Length: 233
Length: 282
Image (cartoon, rainbow over all chains, first blue to last red; front, side, top):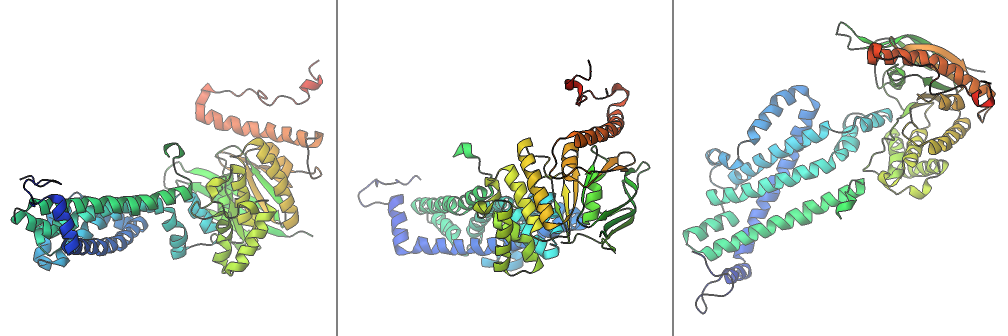
C-alpha cells in the first residue's frame, strides 16, 4: 500500500517522485491543478462579494442582524460538504455543484467576519468623518471599509481555507475534473503513487497561497497601520 | 463690533428619558457666543460639557431647545463646525497628508489644490517633514497637531475642541497652548474648548463657563481680562483660585454621590494657598 518515495523497489518501478514529475511533465497534474484553482478563485470571489454585502446588511440593519445573523451562525456549524447531495439534486453533477458548496462555505465565514468587523469600527473615526461632512456610501467607502481591512483579511484567510477544502471534497465526490477527481481516479486504480502526488500538490498550493497571498498582505497592512508586534520579528 | 455667532436657547438634554429617573445632562442652558471668541467649558466629569459640545457639533441631538449658528438652527454635523477630539482620531490607513486632505476632498476641492492647502496647514503646525508618514509614526503631540491642522484646513467658522490636550504630557501641552493661541489670533475662529484643566482654561479663554452637575448646566461665567500671552501672575492665579473654590463644591457633589457618606472633601487639601510659601501662615 505504501509506494516508495524516491528509490523504486525494483529497477524502473513506480515511485511517488517519478509519478509526480511525469504528471507535471505530461500536463495531467497541472491541468487538474488549474481546474481546481479556477474553481477556488471563482467561488471565493463570489463569496467575498456576497459575504461583504450580507455582512454590511447585518451591520446596518438590526432586523437583519436578529434574523439573518442568527441564521448564518447556525448554518456555519454545518460542514459545507454536507450540502453536496442537495447541490447535486439542484445543479446536477458538475462544476456548478462544486462552486455552490465553495461559495456557501466561504460566504458564511466572510459574512460573520465582515459584520463583526464593521460593528467594531472605532466610533471616534466615524465621528471625525461625520463632522467633516462624510455620509452614506462615502462614509462606508472611505472609513468603515478601510478601517476593517485588517480584520477582513484574517476573515478571508479562514474563508479561503474552507473554500479550498470544499473544492477538493466536491471534486472528489462529484467527479467533475480537477485534483479531487484525479485523486478518486488514483484510488480506483489503486495507484497510490498518484494519490500521494496529488496530496503533495494540494499541500503545496495550500501553503503557497496562505504564505504568499494572505500572510504577505496581512503583514503589509499591519506594518502600515503600525500594529506589528515588533518583539516577534 | 461683535455679533452673536452661536446662540443656545433653553437647551435641554436628558439621557434615558424612558426610565423613571432620567439623567439630566443639560438643564435650561441659555448662552450666546460672539464671533471670534475663545470660550472654555470647564467642569467635573459628568457635567455635560462634552454633551454640549456634541450638540453644537450636531453629533448629538438635544431633547428640547435651540442651538443657532449665525441665526440658523443646527440640524446635523456640518463643515462650518469641526471637532477636534481628545484622541486625535487620525485614520491609521491614511498617511498624514491624506488625513489632512480628507475633508477638503469631501468638499469637492480638486486633489492638487487640496494637497497644496493641506501642506500649507501642515507647515503651520510644523509637520511638513512628516507629510508622508503614517499616523503611528508620530508622537501624541504631533498627532494632535495633525488633528488641529485637519480641522483648520477646512476653514470652519467654529472650532470645537473636546479636551484636545488632556492625553498629552505637561510640556507638550504648554507648547500646544501657545501654538493654538497663535493660530486662533491668526485665523479669528470662534473656539469652544472643553477642558477639566483650570489653568488651561485661564491661559487660553476670553470667557470661561463653569459647568455644574445634577442637573448639568452652566453655573457661572468668568471673564478673563488678563493680557495675552498670559503667564502666571496675580490676576490669573487669583482667578484660578476663585474658579477652583467654586469647582470644589461641584466636585464634592459628584464625589458624595459616588462614594456616599464615606467621603468628605477637605477643602484646599491638594491645591494649597499659593501665598502660603510666602509666609502667610506666620
